Image (cartoon, rainbow, N blue to C red; front, side):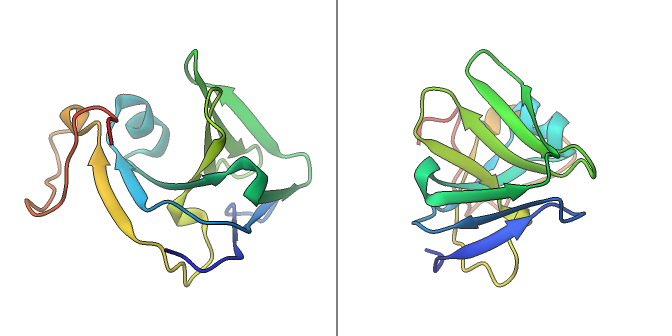
Length: 133
C-alpha cells in the first residue's frame, strides 16, 4: 500500500490532487469504455472521496460516460484522471497521474473478457470477468 500523503496531477499541471488516506491496489480495467478513453486498458487505484483534495484552476471537466459513472479529465491537456461512480463513496484515480515514487501495488485485470486482441497478459496475473472482485 502506498504511503500517504501522495500527490499527482495532469500533464499540464492545471489539475493537482493529494491523497491523505489509504489507496486500493491498482486494478487494470479492460472494459470497452476504459479502452476507448485511455487508448489501452486503464490502470487505477481508488480512495475514499473525503481522503482526496483536488486543486484546479477551473479546468477539471466531467463526462457522464454511463448512467452510473462519470470520468474526470483536464480540459486543457486532456489527461484522464478520475472515475466516479455515483453510488460509491470512493473515487478512482489514474495510477499514471501520481508523482513518483508511488508505492502502489498491482492487483487484478478486470473486465478481462473485453480485452482487445493486440496484447497479452502474463498467465500468472489474476484476471476477472466483469468487475466482481
